[in-house]
Amino acid sequence: MKDAQIIVLATPVFLALIAVELLVGLARGRNTYRLHDAMASIGLGMLSQVVALFTKLLNIGLYTAVFASVAWVQLPATSVWVWVAALLLYDLLYYWKHRFGHRMAIGWAAHVVHHQSEDYNLSTALRQTSTGWLADWLFYLPMAVLGFPPLVFAVVALVDLLYQYWVHTQQIGKLGWFDRWFCSPSNHRVHHAVNDAYVDKNYGGILVLWDRLFGSFTEERDGEPCVYGTRSPLRSFNPLWANLEVYAALARDAWFAGRWADKLRVCFKPPGWRPADVAARFPKPAFDIHQVRRFDPPTGPLEQAAALVVFAGVLAATVLLLWNAHTLSLMAVLLGAAGIVAALSVLGWLGAGRGRARRASVAERAAAG
Image (cartoon, rainbow, N blue to C red; front, side, top):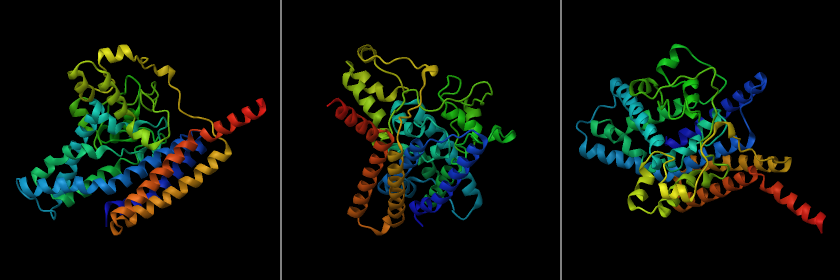
């Protein structure tokens, strides 16, 4: 069974758990969902899986090539200890990959997608980048060199990814001893927060032990509620812009930087760093957590109904494409992917309230004329 088909089989479980979390939140009077934000997050997850149809073979192919040519020893996939060691090593390498995604601007350009939602719920877990394949594979090559077979690598990678789904919730509080060792809802809420006390903490995928070892752990504090999103908010539901916004900002700063060294530093410095001449010419206000306002444009019943119809259609189309992609021609997959991207863009347009704004503008012009 293909990875894409496994994701398809897991999709009903993901959506069912989202429904359960929504109902629990409503019953407790602590709903953490907004319609358009949740659909945008799930839509970005669909887009990432569609893109993976074209990039997964590259990543696995590079891993397999390294394994076949330079592995010190080829470990047996039939031994339990190989699987346990592979999961632990993968999680450690994931920690450093994740930390790179926060501490270097070019890494953040890919990873930022996962943090753009200003809500925090299970739909946020599905909000994944479509450009991580550009560099993520580099971090896992040590496993190939050490001799972990490609099958073992692929399975533990999927296990690590699926584990992280359940920790994206505000409905589960602290879990005592579990929080000290594992990535948990409390620990991961900290990771998604933009508070000064929380930012760039708790990178662990399954184990938070890595954060304790490498000095990046912070506990969630009762007196400091998490504020979610990014310090440079996206303010859009467009899936293409969500994936490209930071790359565009880096390219713009590099273009206007006067020194060649600064043009390179833009990508390799921490996120938010800008050349002095660019920052002076195009100043940005300092981040103030008290000024954070969620992107929540008003939409009417017509936009909401249309968005739900489009969302249901694009979800069905994505499921069909992922399940059958390995049997289709490259052109058919490309056409299907293009249609899904177009539909997701329409969904983002509806979520931004553009239809309502246009109707209001037409009505105002009609009244004035």
